[in-house]
Image (cartoon, rainbow, N blue to C red):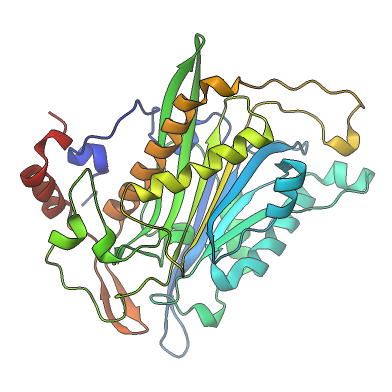
Length: 367
């Protein structure tokens, strides 16, 4: 049975979404998954994967993607973050996976870049520095078995597409847990108009964070009110959340860094204080201002950007799309067996959630 997303379920979220209510509503942004469900030779559950985002699709000319990043709580990894902070851009894909697979996926992403941008790399002294971020799926997945391969990452990269996206137990989100329920991959988008021009902002999350008692939704303390038993071992947080924000609005790197920071407000809307064990790490990028790599460009360059004074609208879009993406991830998720400790990580019951919101805050439902 197809699971309903948050708005389909009847939950009221602010803002106007794009056609697919997904990060792929930002023109040119593609997303691919490699989802791994298997059993190891010693009967351990392999439930993990890779999510790949291509900010500029499959174009063969390497171009800077202007970006900013932020760590609300730095217990995690996002490669390339130092140069994003100093240089204001990255080149190539963004990949999400589990904590112990960052190196494997990074090497695969480099291999993909060397092939995709072959002409530029052969003719010039260029270096590949893709963005790879992680969250920990070791409660559900045999993470120490190092089962993600370069071929898995390349499969995600070569399968990236636009349009509607699968959510929940897919890609890098396959083995993740959120607020004591099954978590995973989620997405949402917002459209907004500035000075007569329409822009889009999309969020994609790999949600693996939060304790059950923290969970709130639309003003309702859901985690405290739902009676689902919490499996042993999920009393404390062992996860993280990666948020990727994409927009076609022209923004400077310092503006994108400020935008990335707003993802923290988005995850806080469902109750997270940014736990000590959580790597809450956020990336924001703009597909505007495409052009040659700085190493290959002329001395004087032109750059279009928006006035900071109009950014309240964009910040609101980032907060709201991040929040909705988390809920979409949880609603799309499926139950998964846990191996350390043993048990079942249950997905949240959509109808129980709906009825609870209806009883406690009916104004938060679509009419």
